[in-house]
Length: 245
Ligand code: NAD
Image 1 (cartoon, helix red, strand yellow):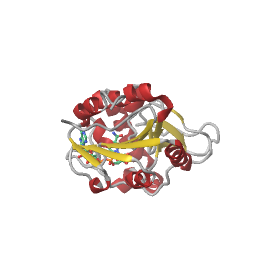
Image 2 (cartoon, protein in one colour; image 1 turned 120 degrees about the horizontal axis):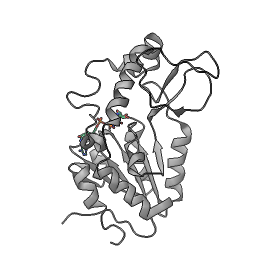
Image 3 (tube, helix red, strand yellow; image 1 turned 90 degrees about the horizontal axis):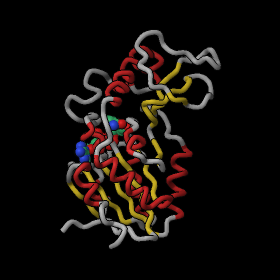
């Protein structure tokens, strides 16, 4: 019989998702053959230096990703998490490394998008807050109309950039106030930091830790439980009847 995370009325659940949860929606993971980066060096399209050198190339790349993400829909894995949030309310928090917006479209609200969101842009020069931008910028590059100087850039955390400290504080505060904590990681290879280290932080706070992944992740040994499989199939079952245990 499949073990399930013990979620009672005093339990808080922190979920970390990665590219794997969106694979069944048709969005390639980081490593998959035919994946995103096949025709580009990461440092050309996903680093501040790459944007400085060739912003048009970066915008062509992200415009294609916007186009692709728009054609995809949330899958049962995203929906199972949105459903769990509805049951738990403030005892639920979802931290995602994904930028595709599918968790939001599935109905998740208590959501920390650690690496940004494909459908937000910001000014590369001034402090104007990120704003909604669904356009594909393949012609003239958009320039900030508030400062008149900076180009718009995707609101994505690129390689070499820091995560938003407020996001990390929110996660830490959530763990700190939990009476009993379950940490569940889904579809993430455990190779990208600091997300890969969250399991260690959660364990240090006494969490019961679960990994749902199609294959062993680099940090599988750090979890109490590993459920191997596709999240669109595993999560609806794993989270189905966890309100009682
Ligand atoms: P990753 O590609 O490094 O690892 C994905 C993991 O998911 C793999 O271990 C794989 O075995 C597993 N997986 C594949 N299909 C699965 C399924 N159906 N169910 C469960 N597991 C499945 O992804 P990562 O750890 O998130 O790190 C990659 C980085 O690239 C992240 O920073 C992320 O922001 C970014 N990225 C985001 C997206 C997206 O927004 N959808 C897509 C690709 C990359």
